[in-house]
Structures are given as C-alpha cells and as structure tokens.
Length: 589
Image (cartoon, rainbow, N blue to C red; front, side):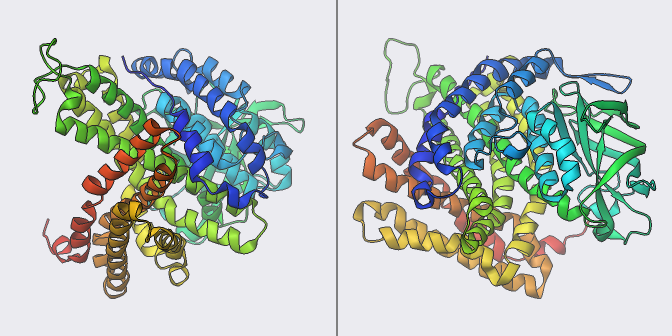
C-alpha cells in the first residue's frame, strides 16, 4: 500500500527563505498570509493525508457509475468534497466580495500540490472551478458575477471549461457549436463537446459550463468564437435553483488513468446561455482560464512526482536485494537494501532533484502572479506578468513530462512489484500521462514558448529570466564557496542563449527549423531555470547550514547531484536544436 506525507517543511522553507517576500511587505495580503502560513499548511496537510489520500486507490478501483445522464462518484468522494468546502479551501484565493478569503496564490500552490499528490481524481473538480472563477471574475458582467460567483466560490457549485469537439482539439477555430440569440439577452446553445472533465457529477448541486460557441455570421476561425455561461440548472434571481437546463452528459470516456474523475461527452440542445465578455472575443476570455489551468496542470505533474518519489524512497530503504558493490553493509541480513546500489540512488536523486526545484519554481511563479495582480507599481506588475507568461509553458510542459518520468522511475525502483496494482505506484504512471496532453499538449507549449514568448515585444519576456539570473551570478561570482554552482550556471545560461539565438534566427528564415527544435528548446530552458533555482537554494543552505545541518546538507547534496548529473543534458539538447529541421521534414511517410 502506498503512503503519503505532505512536504510541509519544504513549503515553509520556500515561503520563508526563498521567496523575496521581504522586498514586497507592502503588497496587500502578503503579511497576513505569512502569519497564517504554518497553520494553513498543516491543516491542508491533515485534510490531504487523512481524508483525500485514503480514497485514492479505492476510488481508482471503484471508478464512476453512469446511468441515464447522471454520474456517481466513488464512495467517500461526496463527503470528502464537503470537508474540502467546509474547510474553506474552495474560497482560498477568491475575492472577499464574493465570499472568498483573498489569500495569495503562492500560498495556494502548496494546497494544490498536496491535493494532487493525495488524490488527483478528486482534485480536478475544485481545480477546474477555480479556473472558471478566474474567467468570470475578469470577463463577466457585474450582474453575472453577483448571481453566480458566491456559490462557485463557496464550492456549492462547480465550474468547467467546454472547448473540445471531435473535429476541434488544439485547433479550436474548427468548433461547430452554435449560439443563437433568444431575443431576451440570452442565447440558445446547441452542439456537442467531448473530453469535458467534471462536466457531470454528484459533488455539487449545480455545474457552470463555460462553453465556446459561434454566433450567427461570426468570422471563421478563432476570431469568431464567443464564450457563454451555460448552467446545468437555471438560477433564479435569489440564487436558488430552478428547472434543469437542456444539456446532458451522454456518456463517460473509459480512460487509461484518473478513473475516478468523470471525463464527459456533453450535448447542448438549445440550452440557455449567457454571453461572457464581448462577442467573438471568447478565446481571450477562455485563455484567462486556460493559462491558470496550465500552471495547475504543471502542479499535477509535480504532485504525482512527489508521492511517487516518497514511495520509491521508502521501498528502496526497505527492499533487500544483493550486496552493495563496495562491500557488505548489513552482515546480519541476507542482502543489503537497494538504496545502496548506485543506479537506484541515481533514480531516487533524480526524483528528489526535480520535485524540490519544481516546487520552488511553481511557488515562485505563483508569487509573480500575485505581484502582477496585487502590486501598486505598474512596472513591477508588468515585470511580474512577463515572468509568469514566460514560465507558464515551462511549468506546464516540463513539470508534466517529469511527473510522468518520475512516476515511471518509481515503478522501476519497485521492480516487478511496481507493475502490480496492489503496490499503488502504477496508478501514478496512469494518472500522470494525461497531463502531458490536456490544456494544450506539451508540443503546443513548446511552440508557444518559441513562436510567442520569444518573439514578444523584442524579447521582453526573456529578460524576465535572464536579468535576475545575471544579477544572481554577479552577486555570488566572487564567493568561493558558491563557485561550484555559479560557474556551471553561467556556462549553461550561455548554452541557453546560444539556443535562443538559433531558434530566433532560424524561425525568421524557416519556421520548420524552429519548430523542429521547440521541444528540445523548452527542455533546455527548463533545465537551466531549475539550475538557477538550485543555485539559489544552495546559497541559502551554505549560509544557514549551521542552524539545521541535516536539512540544509540534504539541499546541498541534491543541488550538487543536479549540477553534476542532470544539468549537463543541456549540451546534447543544444546540439539537437541547432541541427535544424531538415532531417525531420525531409523524411517520407
């Protein structure tokens, strides 16, 4: 049976020592959040460890029940969802005007990670609701917000995004769902959507569908898409529920993983909808939801990597197989634990090096989301948003790639037992795989990085990383104890700059050359960003190791492993990037 213990001490370390909170004490909500951090993290850990995690394997085994349009979640999920909402977790970062607590995103990221580690199938529903909240907050009318947000914020209602159609996945310009004006300010929505996560379930009394559709005479492609709010049940003026709207779940997809999370085929038959934002501007409103969702999906990869790592480490410490190559370590036993074998240690350290740095990057990105939304200085807000825009494809793609890779490493550490369902780690492999696909495939994230983020505003987004990284190097270049990190960091930033120049120039000459190296470029960028994170962690650890030598020595050991065994992968990636796209595009099929 798998186990899970929330990494609360690591969350506290990042909040108190890594995030630059001291530079932004005047930002609204930061001081309160810092005071609340310890009890909030501990309460969330208790919920995830004691309520959500025990339902994970059972929910995966039981799955969902579908009958005549209704979906029943596994045993215990409704009670767990009530506990989640009663604890205030659904309203954590939402506007107090609508019943939220107004706490910052950087404190919400640990809660999201813990939920993903403990029970990802459960965590999808509140995660999607939060995305729906963001879209409505920024684009809906005041009347819509007043009527719908309070119960969405409280968790009494949930929200979902409805984009994909059988012929329109990544290319949303191909959608066919129609929206006809009803003459009373509402619209009649007709069409079908597929792959709708949490489109129907029994956890909430109402589900708010955010549906992309076309108005009559709309321009072709994405420029003719509008966004509509289509509630499962009509809502009266007093916010009580009326009759059911004419939408229906026509079935559930039978999936590789996330078997306790409903992925629905939805049909809208002249369902009443409300326009959100301007006509034909639905993609702009939907991307508000999707960009936040992409960071959340990255956290899914991180959360599964963390629980996979914990179980692989526990198993490696206990499993006795063969003798250590350097000599017998436990003579009283018939064999030594596999944690002593170099290749097992390599896998375990790879898992730890990713999860701890990725956690810091995720929280740092969320911190910049907070600055972009809460700071009063326009330049600080712009710089913070630039960092978020640049990091979003990295967080989404690299963290989900590594979530899958780390989950597979856990199976490898277990050996044959990892392939057996009773041990639990094979579920993490199945659950992790979809995160590389939905909310924009990781190949699409790479194209976004190469063709949108690099080219934007003469490289302005790029400066949001290169400038602070250069400042960090300048601050520590004369410190001899940091030389083992600063010198290779500077060298590999140079490799990233070479790759960036090639991608930029190749893209101008032949976009196929840039696209052929986009995935490698995103990984190269990710490796360098995590090296910057590890160097920052190492600087803190070297300065404070006397206060807690075990904690900080472990950080230093992991940082050294990352720089020695993982970061050198940038060189082969750079070689592949600069090879261009000729070998890719000239092959015949």
